[in-house]
Image (cartoon, rainbow, N blue to C red; front, top):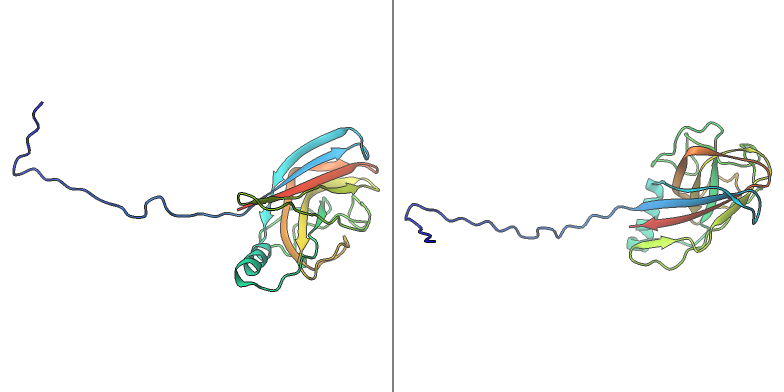
Length: 193
């Protein structure tokens, strides 16, 4: 085969620099859960659900990591979202203002005592961190759980009636989970960049 290039033929080449070197980081959290008939009992239901990592939570993480902003580890505490007046979680939610949901407690069924469990985390690896143990909620009454949330920061409190601290994330099951007194809900959390 003979290839010939005439004087009229043109050769062109384009070079793109930096192609494929861009980075994209998106923070993503995931709740995993199991509902047991009672402590140590058989698993009734289990699953996982995504969540929103709130703007205030993102801002707190960025300020602590990149500005060296003062931060003391208080919590993080995990709470549950009641079906009472539930409509949705939103990325703009804060602990003081979350119009689409109420925290499960003695006022908003299902009740599980007065204290949110403290959640400990394993060391981060490969851009992810996960709770080292699940938060456990033993129900003292009936109701429906819509989801879960994490609150942390200097003002955070373990009281399940508290409205202070930084709301890191909130997420919903998709379908509310009915519970009765004696059921135990275990919830773990992971966060990935």
